[in-house]
Image (cartoon, rainbow, N blue to C red; front, side, top):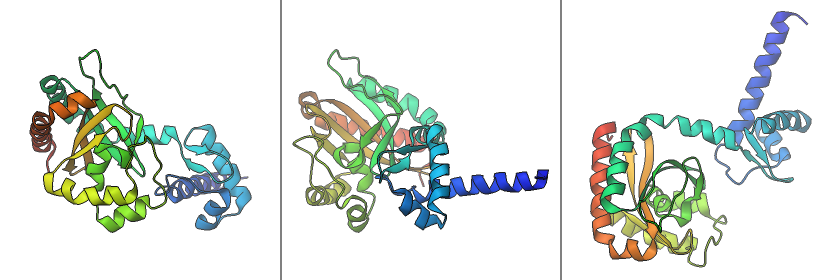
Length: 250
């Protein structure tokens, strides 16, 4: 094989691997090998070899016959693309956490999940401490609801229909969530009282920037979050305005 042939083969492999990754971009629940092969019009055997290679690098994750989905390494790489806003938001999040005493979190949507980009942990002995780079469920968190509120009801229904699972006994159904969205849009913030984790509450606001949509959230024990609700909303609003002024708000 000539050098030119080897180069063309290498480019073809990369192109096919990219096609597989793109086919899974908006399918957080995953696809089977057959479904991927049909979408990108390649033989199933070729898809199998490429999926196996990508899974070794954690760019894909394989869970049973119907569960090929984007892998953790790819998600970590994606989170690095938000480094600019993370750096710019950091001082404002630190002030937010210091002023309220609760954990401040910056998140970004990834399909049915939120990826945590940055966290400033509360100084309280009883506190919530989600780690950067981890994932939360978009429909059961205040940050997720704030981001969903920026979409139309039809878009939310398309994204979530048949995919909502009870994370806790208080997790909303799709219809309950849709009923909350008008108030979230009107008030400018969303809440989560034990919907994602029992005993944990959150209040969040969306942040629209030139780099995309983000959410700023304060999380802590439900009792403290309820008692300080008004001051938390005011602190979140001030934080959002500060970040928006720093990064540019389209």
